[in-house]
Length: 130
Image 1 (tube, rainbow, N blue to C red):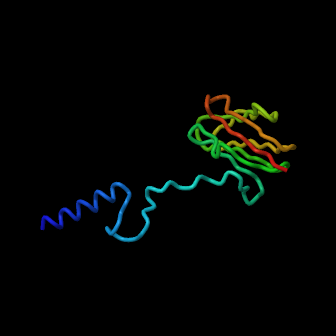
Image 2 (image 1 turned 45 degrees about the horizontal axis):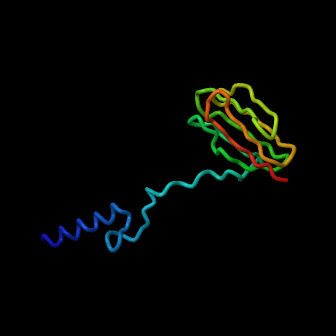
Image 3 (image 1 turned 90 degrees about the vertical axis):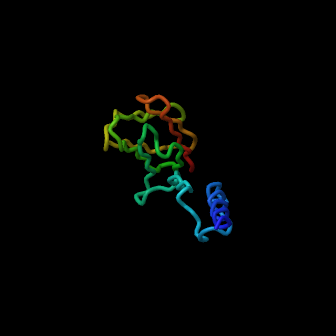
């Protein structure tokens, strides 16, 4: 019986370290694998690029859009936010409460930096391609 305890202990120690060899089943443990971030460059079915405001962040923080493609920001939480270009373009939304949206359509290729002026550190960027 002590030999079985040592084997079980060894398997548990290996599993805790992430190197399971010969213990348990062969299925991959996906519980600890982080989910892939939302695609930053894929437009929605309407052809728009969507950004949400959640947890005092722009999600995703970095996006890619084409010239003439509409970008839509939506505030999905109760603190108000805004969207203000700081470099590469000129736009500023009104204060957006939960459920409010703001959109912008870039007219030229380049890089655009933007922020929420209400929350320090809430930054985003847009790469606009032809």
